[in-house]
Length: 596
Image (cartoon, rainbow, N blue to C red; front, top):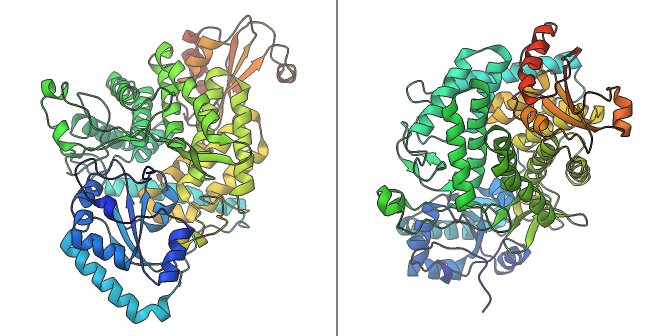
């Protein structure tokens, strides 16, 4: 008997008795042929309430019989199909969506207990029977994003982006919880992009209030129940305003960006505690999720009873289940963080982990004939998602800056060309390549703000390294296009605001001149650990065409040349000289350039 593609609660349940189908044309064709609504369940292997629903609602005999008889049940793993989740999530996980045979949402919710589900199934069947002629296959047009006029004058576009950036910051200030940190009341999510933005604005403007919001939140998260002080790592969110009681799943994605956030705070503020928290978080990830293949699984399960055990009992108990499926975007995020930790904490430990993962990810997930795949559960699957392209682009740029190996830069160029071929619509990037047989809401491809913003930042970084004006112009147009939507979305537009903030900053270009006999390894690792809103690290080999064009002298070697605009420091030959070089640049920079 073939192994089921579906993953249910690890505790006793009967959810497998439902005749689940995978998302695909077969399920939709059957729904059309049998004239039955679709019951779509979006679950996740780490999701506590998904497990509860498997153990209760989907284990109820009457519910199982009703679903199998009157519906076409489709089950989707959120981590493996973020594209389905983007279009059908009903406010959390599990998502329970009742659809027409054509894929339009009739109704739905999150966790639904057996009694509620019995009533809901009857209501949906009655509604469908009475109205099928008017709603069959009706697919509502989604509202177009509020993208700006591409023909607007540069002055107007600049004003609009500045206003949108300030609107995002004002939204953060308005929703900041002064008593406990974070945003809003409860539940509280960490929202690391928001606090990275606050720290970046502090470096740009000296806004102590922005820094204070970030510090209050970082201290509260690390000092409360969100942070696993014993094993390391952060739980997904807090159920309380005070950060005291978490939801106990741990996600690779969350911990990758939170560890990076704490490292950023260490870089900017110099608080050693933040470095220690980041290191403890990475230790958890490398112990609990890192596979023999050199990549990280996606999550560790929410086992509330385990995490409530005293220290001596937790050490003896079996740890919660760790998912072994690899996801490209999340692994790329973790690679970038591990490279930063290599510079700031321990290069001997983190460098081989990060570079092994970067090679493994490229080898497993990139197929020149097919594209970049999203996940690998034994076989790479689902090519063509924007989220994977943008985050791997950043990891490759980090790999180049950290090692000086131009192969990473060429791979990044290859990814950009791939994205342009399959996702660029002439103005912005779509969330995925157009399916050959679009089902349901896949008839309408999305223009996601967050991923376009991450792409804009990657393009700005690439442009600064390679002096590629076309990449820079593409980034600016992406940022301008989403400015009106960012203004509307407030705190949720923090990724866009980070891109706009980066664009506002003058580039800090660090060029390393080296040879095979005089490598710039120590200088490179040290300057990689310097925080700047728009830092770029280039490597030039003595005697290469790039060196001959550069005008740099042959000695000293190796040497680091740091410039911002027209202000350049004297060549640096030892890592200890970097700080003095930066100070000389910022003091010499004309007004408007000394703001990092």
